[in-house]
Image (cartoon, rainbow, N blue to C red; front, side, top):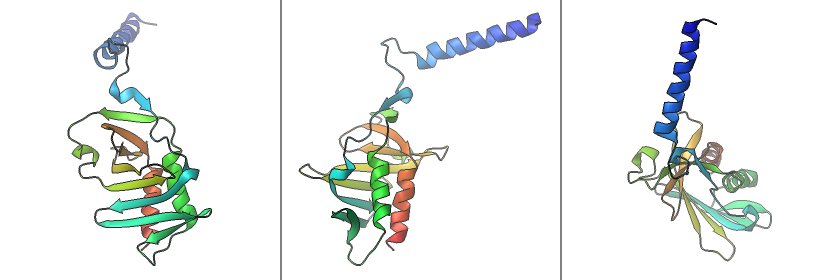
Length: 172
């Protein structure tokens, strides 16, 4: 190994150490906001009675009848029960997801002001729970989301948007 290569390795090490202390390290011991992970929903898909999906002025309301899901509003629209169940499962069975913003004022860059779509989940004996979905992230691998009553912005899997799009196409 030459002295030049050894000096380059040391310089890279010091550069990474400086980046860590300048950007990632917080004195209070908490990780930086973009490194925080948190549970997104604490709902049991088996206890859900209905799901409403809204985009602008359009909405689809789906209800469970027995062990099958069907669109009940607007009347006459149909979609496979498994498609609705897949949307619900992808939303309720998310592992801890990344928190990308904590109490940010301007939600427009995330596509949450106004939101692209809103899902209202109704569980037995509980008030409805709303989830707002925004734009995809720049890499196109996830979607920005926000829970009702929570100022944080989360990054959830793109499958939720995928199944939502399929539901809208099937219901046309």
